[in-house]
Image (cartoon, rainbow, N blue to C red; front, side, top):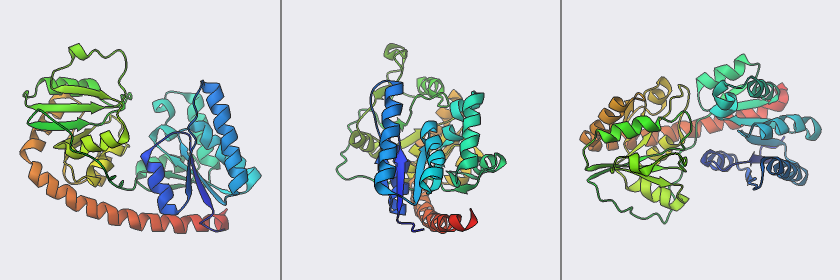
Length: 325
């Protein structure tokens, strides 16, 4: 089998897909359909099959979530004869945070049938192996900073970007409480489409909800702030915003978990998801900003070299799969 004959499929837009597909030299197919749930799934499925028929790939990688896309890819391999690679995010390994027995059972079937499940850390890999699957650990590639970004305009003395999707694992309310306890010359800008139930009038003046902003505006924001905040209550999650922070040499406030400390090991103040902890981390970042910037710059070099080595190992692993299957 030729490693060059591969495609990367996703039913949603996510930065990791581009970094991975580019490194493998595979065409990225972002199948983004509109409409109701049933219509969207049917259209996405038909487009997926069309891509497989047209390209006749020997390797097919698919992002999970979507759980349905991952299931389609591991089942159609028996018809098309390709090697199936499932790039499983936390929500792919633990759908709905593990609350749905049916979805978790489907996830386990996918892990069992996939030729390999790619995850970002050893803890998730252990789960896949326990479920009878084969796992390979490969964190995100550090993203390339796009050209054409512009300086973001601020009024406060110190400015932070809180990268947030308003998912259940993100402690938004705790960050709000933390900002209430900060001086007025520290402002936190929150990215992401926020729920309608959030009232701007109840938020502190030094916390700004930006809502969804285009990619160029997003990069302009996070490249202009003093530091980036990315928090999750998940124990085994490496957050996308942290990779972006490293790419920009930005000090960060990250969740105090063993995985975060192991991978993002410098240029960071770690915080538990409480208002007091987040507040203290923000103040410490301001105090140690120059030192943290130097640390994260060194970390960027180390992570880049580490990832280059890991993707080389992954390519070797993929070419050996047909021999072991």
